[in-house]
Each structure stands twice: as C-alpha cells, then as structure tokens.
Image (tube, rainbow, N blue to C red; front, side, top):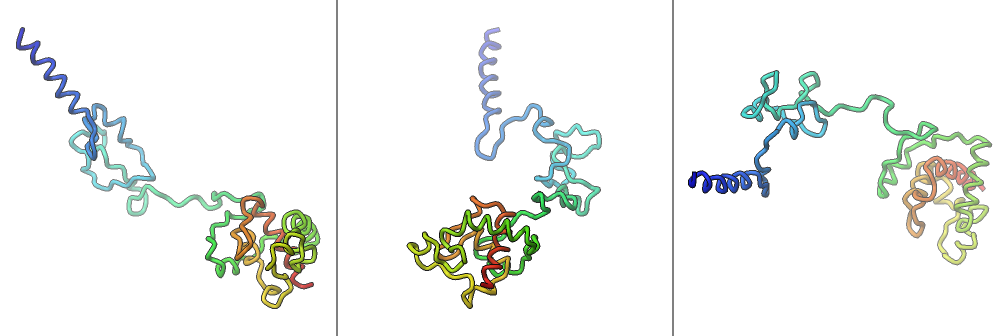
Length: 204
C-alpha cells in the first residue's frame, strides 16, 4: 500500500508532463478525432493515405490525417469558385485589384458605364463634390485649392487630353504624383462616373 501511494504521484507527474505542448510537440492527444477532421478541408492537403494510421479508427481504413478528395483532379480539396460567385457591385462590376504601379494595365480597362447624358450628369455632380476644389470647374487646374497647391494639370493639356478611362480611374483610386488616393472616400462606381465626366472635360 505504501508503494502504491508513492507510485500515484509519480504517475501523475509523468501524465501531466506527457500532456505538455512545447515547440513542435503538440503533447499527448486523448481524442485526436476532435482535432483532425475527416471532412475535406480546403486549406489542408494531406495525400498520404497512411498518415495517422497508428491512431485511426476511420471506417474506410485510411490514416487519421488523410483528407484529400479523390473525386477532384489531383485529389485536391481546393476548388475554383462557381462562375459568378465573386463579389460584384450592384452594376456587376468586379472588385478593383490593380496595384498603384500597374498604371499601364489600368489604361486597358474599359469604363463599365456608358457616356450617356445621365452618367455624365451624375459624373459632373460627383466631380463638383470631390474634384472641383483642386481641378477647377472646367478641369483646367484652377480650383481654389489647386491654385494654392500649385502643379494641378489641365485635363485638356496635350499629354492629358487622350488619357483613357482606365488611367483616370486608376489615378483617382491610387493617386498620382501630388494627388492623393481617393478610394477610401469615393466608391468604385462613383469613380468610374467621375472618369466619364473628366473625359468630357478633356475635350474642352
């Protein structure tokens, strides 16, 4: 009995030590099925069918950690989203992903809004609200802030009058030279509408 009393504390110390997780050692797992899900997980890809065989009690006889989908190409768990499931705006516009230095790629993007009188009118209203103070009512760079700030170009200048819609949208989004980005203040749809009105000012 005395030996048993001495053995119990020692056994508890060993048991607690076995459960301790350190570094890459996860410690002793008493219920691994609660940690390693058998359903397919898109962010993991374990193709070894024997992985975790030593603790597996799966009905299919495979290792506990094996989780690849044999019904997909290369047994992949990750699949492409269903067509049309990427988030878009109410006007079916995809999220804008180009970075600031991708100006050449931006220039190739077409404006999703037509140059209709309605879009031009809305673009003018937004331009007046967000842009006129620097660029001026006529787009010549003579807005009240632009005069003080100095260096605001005219939209009708030789090197500006033929800039494509994608370029203008990208500059509004990310800024350019002394112009700061406006993506956090103006939605994508509104930026495209402003670009349409700027196109009109380019021809004046």
